[in-house]
View 1: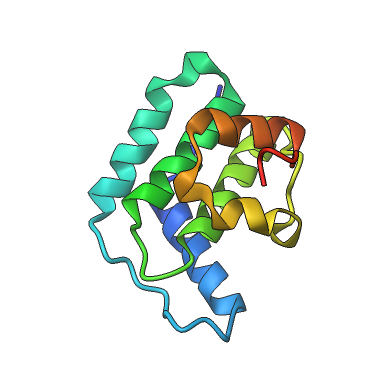
View 2 (view 1 turned 180 degrees about the vertical axis):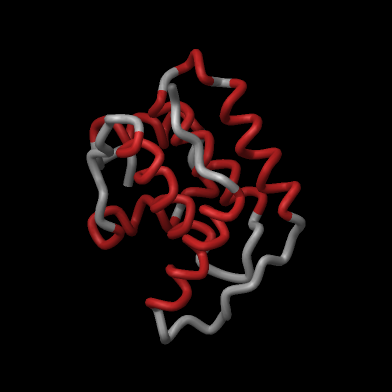
Length: 128
């Protein structure tokens, strides 16, 4: 059985991300409805047949594009995707934010397939 994050898991992750980075100019704040985040989770569930790393990549992409928080969306998306993979017995190639920051910073310009490739194989010249 596949474990999926809840809306509360994602909101708490953003709270934790924003609490750690004391220099961040944006406080933790949900600026959309929880239903929007739930829609992302539901869409992720619908693509279960495409594999766990595809789902994690889809989650990252959609969270960044939806921009549910006042700040920390990309970091939140990366951490939630890593937790999703780990809870389901997989391990992303780039777990530490600092090791993947260049890629994570540009998530909004990446396709789901590019994100999936990065999660499976780590950074390449093309992915940076």
